Length: 155
Image (cartoon, rainbow, N blue to C red; front, side, top):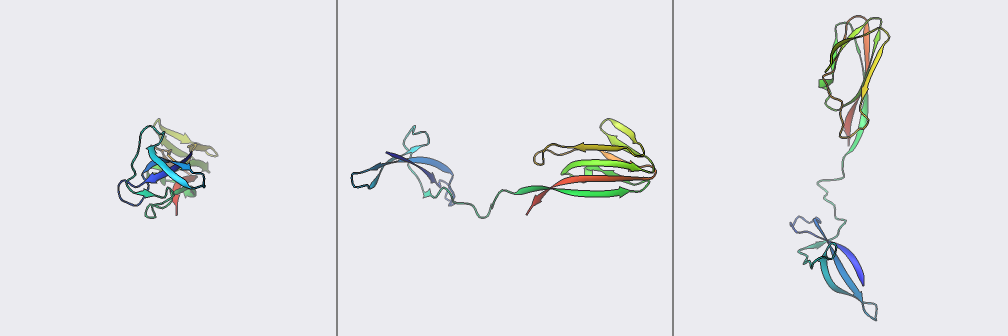
């Protein structure tokens, strides 16, 4: 006896949506004969509505999207600000103060980014995890350089 995994299109869209098992027997001449169709696990008989190839793919849906991370960088002159809220797919950010200081505002409040100091925040995964604010960085004097990454969907 042979078990063959089969698929059924129960909603008429041409795509497989239910899996079932067909039991096949082999006669003395090597011919296959169906012995019946059953639910997965062989717990009860199953009558297919519209059998389809299990590898049928919905061309409209296409493949699952691929995700990537895009590098970005900006220099803030004295008085300029940057906000994480502008980047809904933010993955990481590093701020470095040059020739002056900056102000970093997070959920804990405002703090000084001192000359030569770097501050970094990031997430450990690129999908289903995003860096959220509040996170605002302002260059008070000198320049604050921001290097950050955002999640993108690749085409």
